[in-house]
Image 1 (spheres, rainbow, N blue to C red):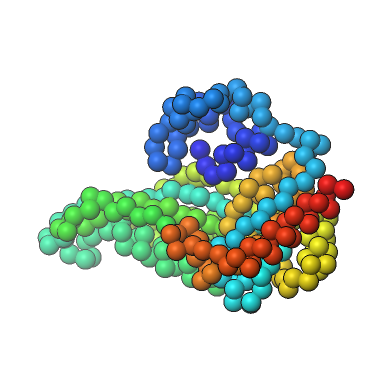
Image 2 (image 1 turned 90 degrees about the horizontal axis):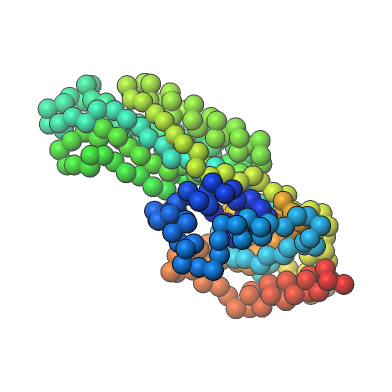
Length: 280
């Protein structure tokens, strides 16, 4: 089903086929979950808004990274939100006995994945200033002490705030994986499972938030968001703006995630002032 289901419903970005036949990341069918609520497929499809119906959207969020804390800035003014490509990939070779198969005769799927992880990261880091790749999940099969891996499945996350960089990085990483597979006698395949496009924050919203930040006397800096946000989805129907406050130690999506309450107060005040100005 992908990310941002609520926001995608709000902008009319969900399809009937997805709602009726899609599954969640944890496995259950979306329609089965929906059956226990007051919502229906039709009501969700009817909820979509169009641009004239929404004046603006503002979002306050932790940075989810270490930049603001490192720069000792309590406020971040987001000018761009990175797009992403989520893929599920797989290297396939031959499962064979670990003791009876010499190195030169092995078709080790995991080694193909390991080489791709290292070389892909190096490629993204050297070639692109604003492109990132991450392998977050790995499954090595058949998963035995004594068997050379015959298959290595993985997730691939590519991100950039530049549409051109995102498209090029995704394409180049797939070509790299094919080259590695060919050199090792493996096969490679992948499937695109989710994608969002980069978004630039409109000058109108950037200017408004900057002025309110100046009037409040809050030190600030402008930065791009490497993480996706609801604002990214809402940008298809209205002008959006984003305010960041620091994430101590850059930690998010973790039980150790926390915030500084002084930073939260500043962020909330800036959000309130900006909303009041928009409402005038």
